[in-house]
Amino acid sequence: GLKIATIGGGSSYTPEIVEGFIKRYDELPVKDLYLVDIEEGKWKLDIVGALAQRMVEEAGVDMKIHLTLDRREAIKDADFVTTQFRVGLLDARIRDEKIPLRYNCIGQETTGAGGLAKALRTIPVILDICKDIEELAPDAWLINFTNPSGIITETINKHTNVKSIGLCNVPVLMHMISADILGVDRNDVRMDLVGLNHLVWGRDVIYKGESKIDEVIERTLSGNIETVKNVANIPWGDDLLKSLGMLPCPYHRYYYLTDNMLQEEIEAAKTKGTRGEVVKKVEAELFELYKDPNLKVKPKQLEQRGGQYYSDAACNLISSIYNDKGDIHYLNVKNNGTVDCLPDDSAIERTCYVDKEGAHPLNVKPLPSKVKGLLQVVNEYESLAVEAGVYGDYDAALQALVIHPLVESSIAKPLLDDIIKENLDYLPQF
Ligand code: NAD
Ligand code: G6P
Ligand code: MN
Ligand code: MN
Image (cartoon, rainbow, N blue to C red; front, side, top):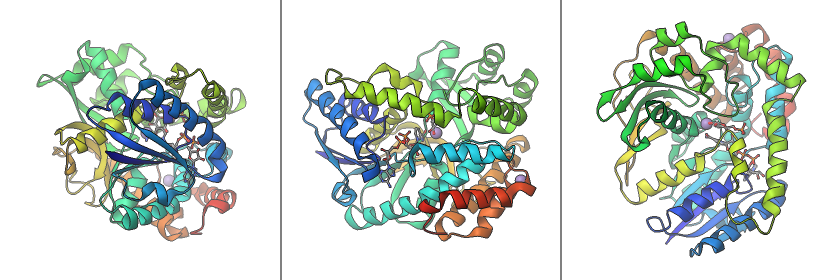
């Protein structure tokens, strides 16, 4: 039987991963699922853990749910470790959204200055987790969701010996939406997807060997299709989409429609609150539901969260590795020459073939200038973020913001100083 350790087990998304393991029990017999959290999140772990327990009983599968604050106990001899923790919880996210807005700068939890702040808090923790894995479960796979997922994957690859793969639900949603637009079975579609996490382009949508990207773009022009709940669904503009000739991911709006997105954020902050503030309310409602002893399945209301399907993608991936399936996933992996205009040790998000050896990114034709420019600069921003996070290198952090396309360079220093000051409790490296 398999042992899985999920770090950040108190997450409101946990019922989805539990459902994922229950559904696949025949092909993926998870005997022990360790949900790990910290003192601050213990109340969440207790509620969601009790629900997980009821779900397993209701389904009648032989899966033991262990709730623990002892990470090492959970990691010891695990086959897979999944990470879904949020350092500083939602209050830290809300600060990441609000600090940049003071400077009239995009305030988003993964993209731009807020993403750098989240990376700086998360890197020390992921490095500690990796030390535990190196010592206690050196053969385990680490499946990371913790954002910023690309930067965290790159940190693990550059600075540890842990086998790891990063995941995001955005490519999964792009795949589903493209198939739905074409009106075909989702299993018959494959996307040629390439870029970085939250900066990934759908270069093609292939249906039974045929390119369908033009049709998908045509249909995206007329409709205003929502991909994720947490990014305002502002229309792309026909000229932009036609000239791009690819499917942008929802987060591209921060780059392609910067002013509109900024105005939308300023307006939202004044009225309904930032996304983090909205999520705080959603989360409170979810935990009220989770407390109900009669609830024995994943509730529908979880769909209000932007990360839906992410744990299902994790279960799928784990099953493909475990069962040596040789099927296709969209993953964050080491570039290793796949994208010729990026360094080998950068993390890319790419269509991958997965078997028991892990993830193998498919070859990529050279990228055109319209994609390459933005891709390279954001990639270098990410490398600087890794340096800053690992070594507490102030100059690297400052240059990360200076070169970031969403940060006006003259505000980089005061913005960074605010970020460091307001996160000091979580920045042992600084
Ligand atoms: P959350 O606020 O519910 O946090 C999950 C848990 O992490 C909490 O219970 C918290 O106590 C715990 N935690 C904090 N620090 C910890 C530590 N050092 N060790 C162990 N546990 C710790 O967060 P959430 O909304 O469920 O999201 C969790 C993470 O997953 C975030 O980083 C989020 O950005 C990410 N996420 C990624 C995707 C994706 O597409 N990759 C999708 C959804 C969420
Ligand atoms: C998206 C992203 C995730 C992100 C989530 C936020 O789908 O892919 O990386 O964590 O949405 O959702 P939330 O409900 O927390 O705003
Ligand atoms: Mn994501
Ligand atoms: Mn800049």
